Image 1 (cartoon, helix red, strand yellow):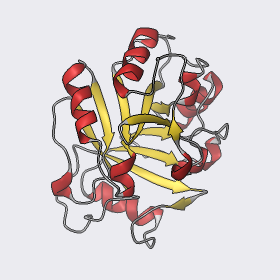
Image 2 (cartoon, rainbow, N blue to C red):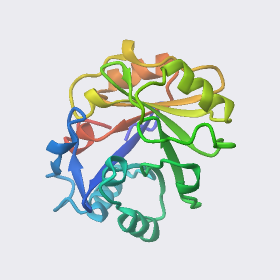
Image 3 (cartoon, rainbow, N blue to C red):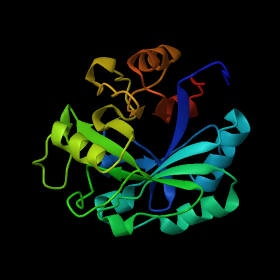
Amino acid sequence: MNVNRSTQIIPVLDIREGVVVKASGGRRDDYMPIASPIAPSSDPVQIVDGFIKLFGFSLFYIADLDAIIGSGSNKRVVEELLNRFDLHFMLDGGFRRQRDIWKHPDLTPIVATETFEDWDNADSLSDVIVSIDTFDGNLLTPGGCATLESSLGRARALGVWRFIHLRLEAVGEPDFDETRLIPPAPGEKWYAGGGVRTEDDLRKLKSLGYVGALVSTALHNQKLP
């Protein structure tokens, strides 16, 4: 691992029906269990163990796809990972209301614009990361009517200072385009998700002011770090 790199790589676990799946272009119906050289199966425990042994990661990002699309939950899988490993996890658990947000010392919850419906009733959200979810430049929200500017404004008013810009169309694709990323504001921490595959991509993120990248495909292909 490149210890001199200042843009943090955060490995992604997209979990559906209890297994890690290969995400591609935001087409969730097409996601299939991942076949990776780093682990003997798509079992999340084995994938995490493989990442640790190969790269030494201590922070992971989890997307509970069943919770996000409203078809179920992988809570038991996440709990097993929390109990088994001495790690920290970011979790997009498809949280729709503030009362749904998980609290655990080894977990940072992610509130995503695609699913969260409780902006008007929430008090402080300073302890979460807000994921700004876009597809081909369009903001994804439950009602489809909020703008990027209004969503950022509401999040910042609730004390949010950590953000992810998740470009769903670029997930699992060779489609990194730094010109489509949201510029970070001073004092904020921003992470990018979607299409990050090379050291050059990471350098571009650093130049934009991003502190980290959510990465899956390039890690399984051992192109990074």
